[in-house]
Length: 344
Length: 259
Ligand SMILES: Nc1ncnc2c1ncn2[C@@H]1O[C@H](COP(=O)(O)OP(=O)(O)OP(=O)(O)O)[C@@H](O)[C@H]1O
Ligand SMILES: [Mg+2]
Image 1 (tube, protein in one colour):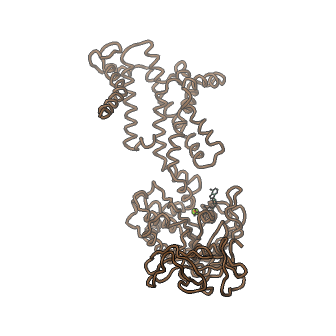
Image 2 (cartoon, helix red, strand yellow):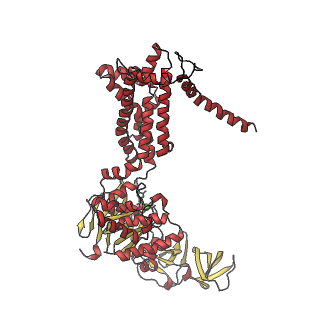
Image 3 (cartoon, helix red, strand yellow):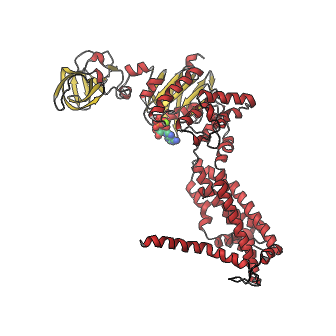
């Protein structure tokens, strides 16, 4: 076993009855990595997490963790922790007892138990709340208890299913840093689910983008952000202008235009972020359909022979008036070449 | 304007209907006279004391207690796992099972009693006490399933998974996290079952036999022969017992949340 294959899924197929939610997934995760599982609703993120945790039996394939095949290991014997989206704290137990729950089952007692529980609560900054019941805590505090409860078990892998989605915007930012800190300090291998690309980009060492049960792309945040491999990923990480490419023609639906410039071989599509589209000069013309001021920049929505295009330029530049015609350029050098388009 | 006057009036009437009989019985039981009458003739506690001297009341009280406590416990032993299975697993025909389980609430007690007598007691020649026990268990079961199901529905099922991931077995998770969290519901079901069983008449009427009677049946029988205020006194005592139980339950459990 190498560290790069600390957790590996091999041809893992997960189904609900006859419906296959995740077909033949292959995935390797390294020791100590902080990985984000990113994808739209229903793409199989939770399903994958539950299978790794042992709450869902795979219909085929295998899961190996730290050199051991755990495919058939029951959930209560796996060194895997899971933080639920709903936190799933035990309502009848106070904070201390919630955190002590797993340790007690392991037979940890007395001073040892006390030290470990208090250490766990200290890690998440909740030493003062030991006697509170879950109902007497805020969402963020419940989240921390849930995290501490899993962390004290010293799992080899800690899974978090949408850990931040129930928190308000400010707490979410706070918990982001908190999760990162806890992960780096403890060195635990962590996989968290999210459908928020910003969250994934900000926190993860590596991002796995999923679509319809399949892995669309795996890469560092920089790779995913700058070099999406498909229209799906490009769309997901905010390239607002994503076009198919056919024999030197850019296409969206019915519309198409000639592309001026050469592209790398095997490129099936091109994607531009709004900021990389030059406005005011260039071979193409469009009509301004909408403008909006966004602080440092101004956003434009253009009607073009290629359909709608979203562009963005410095807010200090003169405004292109609504309804007026404007020249623009699609610079191939600034585009992200897509190796796959429309599932091909 | 009229409704402002009207609604307190209705409320008063309802209260009068609810509390009136209770007040009359208490008054009648404090009578010093020889026959059951309202208003009472004079005041005394003699009938209240008399109740404790009547041998058959003592016996049937014991039987009623046994049926109420034993039957409720049995109904819970059957009902809690049943409710759990119905709420947590995709049981085929769950709705049908639910309907069947709660049918004794819908079917009149007289019919249940008659059916049990005709198709259970007579053909299998079961003892009377056993038949009563089975009947009371069956009567309480629907209440147990309903009340316990309600508290299970309010309990998220992911806490069981959380317990399992922290090392508990499925069974362990049930006892460690499910049971403690539906404790209130179970106690509520117990009290409801106890009161239902204790006040049960129609079913017990068919199944009571020589020497084995529940308290309400015994009171009916007593009244057919003797028409003295001791029955009123006993009724008042029983009413206070029920009231006490419900009061304690509300006080310590917030009983009304579950029913
Ligand atoms: N218990 C279930 N029974 C049947 N199908 C299910 C079940 N749970 C999920 N699915 C299906 O499996 C697929 C993947 O679901 P999953 O819950 O893993 O999605 P997800 O990526 O976690 O989505 P979300 O972001 O909405 O949580 C979906 O098509 C879903 O309908
Ligand atoms: Mg999910």
